[in-house]
Image 1 (cartoon, rainbow, N blue to C red):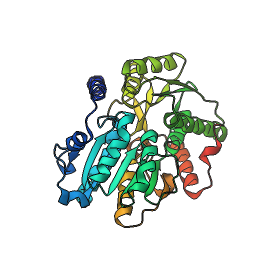
Image 2: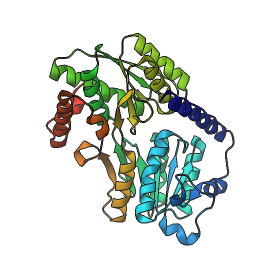
Image 3: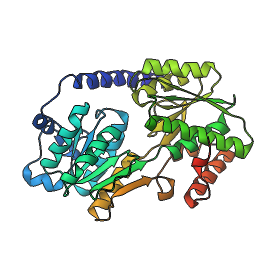
Image 4: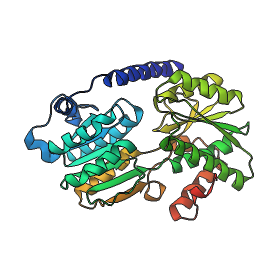
Length: 356
């Protein structure tokens, strides 16, 4: 397992270097479009040729602030792979790593004939919403967008991190032996802090419901890629008594997992199932954005996609944990998880009322 983590850490460093080098040279709009276009079926990355004009009716794309190698990008890409496999749709991933590229890349894709343009994260989503009225025949889907825009061809989709983090907090609170747990985030920004807030709310719920007195300590890495700093942050929490650490730190999270493995304590993974990285990861808080992407495009094809905002979560059957982790829990913790899931589904439990 440690060898696997070491390999992943090395890979994360390569991704970091590639991501940084990609920002040193700003491609022309036409070149950027040609570089990234692809039929998806061949591999989970873009090919070298732009689609023929005749294919534009079958073209959708994603324009992202993150590099395609980032874990969240890879997870999102799985949704597009499913779209390709199910509908034969041609997909294109466009990296817009600088703010100056956002509008250029979005307009380029609209003008080459993309019928649906997905954008990802707040800054580029705002740009997409601004230009959308100029392209009324293009559907814009804004991923991880907490805003609501009253624009006919704009839909915001969120697979909220609060619910999976809340359940992770309940599991952590009922599992810890020291009564102290930790949380490591990449950057001190709203989309990341929300993971902590949901986690802390779940701990608060468990404390109130089951008579516990679990404490949570948080810290930030200050980077999405620096695994060394992330490991140091986790070690500090561990030295303060945490025997479970939840990480929401992108590539840097591999450093947290390594630190937990070295200290022989438990770790909680994020976004996708991370139990295969190391056996210390006993729980993963799933944010199934890939399912949200697929469901949204299916609704578009069925002409049932509405403007406004869609929040995918427990109430509409989205997975927030892996069954393989659930099955390993003691019966009392399973029962606690079941209670939360049922309460959120029927509306009797307000997970946002805790952690205040």
